[in-house]
Amino acid sequence: MLNSLLASDHDAIDDLFAQSETALKAKDHERALALLDLAWARLAVHIRAENVRLFPRILRSGDRLEAGQRERIASLIARLREDHNFFMATLAEAIKLARALSEDEGRFAQVLEKIEAVKRRLSAHNELEESMVYSLPAHLLDEAELEDLKQAVQRELENLPPRYARGGEID
Image 1 (cartoon, helix red, strand yellow):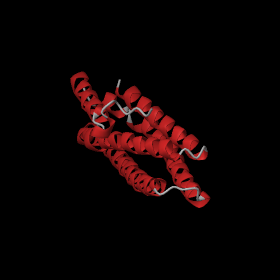
Image 2 (image 1 turned 45 degrees about the vertical axis):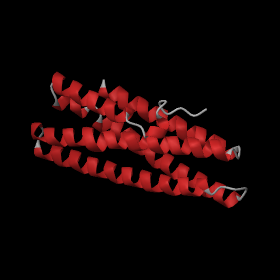
Image 3 (image 1 turned 90 degrees about the vertical axis):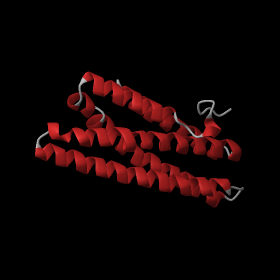
Image 4 (image 1 turned 135 degrees about the vertical axis):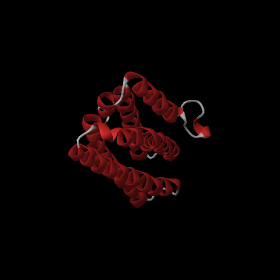
C-alpha cells in the first residue's frame, strides 16, 4: 500500500539522521558526512516523489471532494511543500558545514543544530503526511489509479543519485 511505502521511507530516513548524529558526536567526520549526504539524497528523492507524483495526483482528484475539503487539502499540501523547502535548504547548509569540519567544536554544534532543526520539523511534518495525506489516494482513486500512483512513487524513491547506485548503503 502507498501509505506503508512512504511511511517506511520516513523511518529509513529518520534512521539515517540518527546515524549521522551518532557519527558526528563520535567525531567520525568522514562517516558523518557520508551519512548526512545519504540522508539528504534519500529525503530529496522522497520529496520529489511527493511533489511530482503524490501531491499533484491528490490535487487533480480534488473534484471528488467538497469545496471546503479541497481548500483544506490544498492548504495542507502548500504547507508540506514549504517544509520540503526548509528541509532541503537547511540540510544544504549542514552539509556545507560538515564538509568543513575540523576539531572546531563550534562547527560540530552548528551541524548538530541544523540536523536537530530538521528532525524536529520533520517529525511533525511526517505525522501530518501519515495521518492526513497518505490515506487520501485510497479515498480518491480507483484501484488501477492507486496502483499506478504507487508504482510511480516507488520509481521515484528508487531513483537515487548515481553515487548511491548500490541502493544507498554506507559502509
